[in-house]
Length: 189
Image (tube, rainbow, N blue to C red; front, side, top):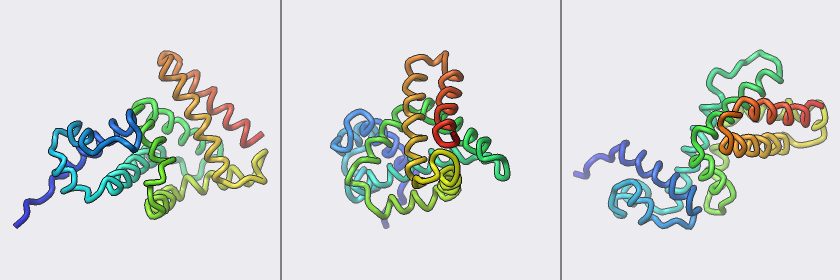
């Protein structure tokens, strides 16, 4: 009888993959990932049948972690601006606290190794966020743009804010607010 898989090892492999992908991109070897997780390369393939499966599971894990961070305590029923600010603050906080995860997620998001199935799973999990982006797109300056465009603007401005926060951590509040103000003016103005 086969030994049961350890969730701790699975998590260690995903965490190592996140760090290695952040530093080397999706072309990083499974040997480097296994070494980072302190497991044999064969053990990695016990948990993930292929490198593509590992990358897709990493993409899903990072996206779900981000979604949970952004949507915890989501203020349903509050104004559109308050809901956006809630999501914004948590997005900035997550990205600033986890720069390697953020970097790995950016690498994975543009990779052709991420399957349509994984992208659909993420899209389904972000329903409440997508509804909010559609609401942003329905009014103001973005009324003729798709919700995905509004979300991309949010992401681009958030990336800029997080980059400045990484360089000047003492100015985190300033850049968080300035970034949100720029985003809000772009979509609501």
